[in-house]
Image (cartoon, rainbow, N blue to C red; front, top):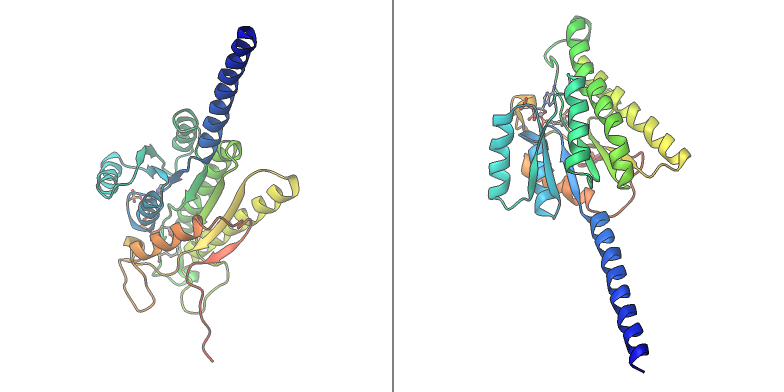
Length: 264
Ligand SMILES: NC(=O)c1ccc[n+]([C@@H]2O[C@H](COP(=O)([O-])OP(=O)(O)OC[C@H]3O[C@@H](n4cnc5c(N)ncnc54)[C@H](OP(=O)(O)O)[C@@H]3O)[C@@H](O)[C@H]2O)c1
């Protein structure tokens, strides 16, 4: 009888260890870790803050230590779990390679990349007067840099069945506002998202990629414009966090955070 009880005891210990292992793995899979590029200010800061307040552990993507540390202090003071910051300069491929290596080593559970960092180019010029240098610089950061970073992060995100989200503007040309370098770079970024989403779907790759247009937002990018229809980074950050936490699939979608309501 004692022998049977001993075997039973060992079996219970074995089952307990197995269950603990399983729960740890589930916990690891469910841990929500996000890297937001350009998170030291503007929309990126708002997204990092509100994802943090909704339970995500946050990694700040920035290209300057002082600016990153300042943002981290503010986020921590709000109660956000900031894991650290990673140097991401979209115009420098070497910095992107180091960032991907660092994140894979230090934060292997990363399951959300928000491609937010971007530049406006010269928004004051007519299309025909745009210097080639402005086109090149803006495309290099907003499209080439974002694509390079996305490429490098796909393996990490795929391992965690995660998502990549681009912060962008529509590809359609608006009659009211159409700075050539900026809209061209974003149209290229939008095409990149569409191609990758289609390939992920066709090949059954376990990653989701989609784009979000936050709508006009008062930030340094537009000289802190605050016209009617503009939102602040808190409102946009909170709405982005709500979208990213909605539990739905958005593969290949272009989502307007504030859809334009057509009046009759
Ligand atoms: N504001 C709007 O109305 C609006 C509307 C639609 C879409 N968006 C998009 O939203 C995103 C964020 O814009 P925002 O308005 O928040 O602009 P922002 O306040 O100027 O912030 C831009 C962020 O990107 C970073 N950044 C700039 N150049 C970079 C580079 N070469 N490498 C890495 N990071 C770089 C900046 O870092 P530093 O501080 O170091 O310069 C900053 O953290 C952009 O992709 C923009 O196109 C904005």
